[in-house]
Image (tube, rainbow, N blue to C red; front, side, top):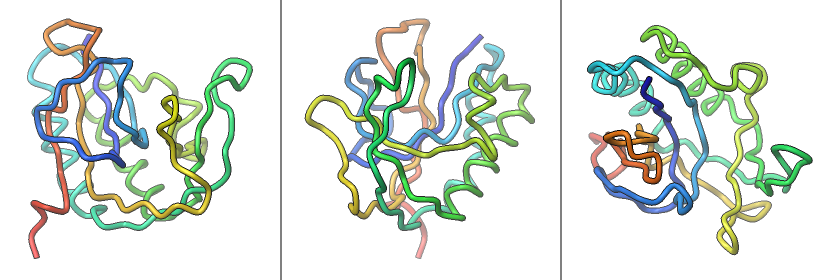
Length: 163
């Protein structure tokens, strides 16, 4: 199985960027899913493209801090509810499922979706910060079978958006 994730980066990244799994740029997870090993990454990018493109430029506001994971031990900054972000998430979940993708955390999708940005040491967002969806990406969680790194497979950004 191949593990893919669609995210909205809140830090600058480049198409094709490879980074250690322990050093993710700050991001909002949109949907994470497992799929078969064929050409599904390219098909996922094609299906996600219109939704990602339409969401570029959406403005979000950072809400309160919270703790996720076991014993609430993972510090995060919640993103205040925003209809366009929720719609993007739901569209991408549907697209992943149409590829035969297995959603790894179904309880945290659709009505259970809680968008957030995990803190990474001193890197974090603060309550009240404004965030613009200007970099949405499809990321391979184990490029060439290497689970120690991540690779940006496709990046949609405001820089490339028409108009």
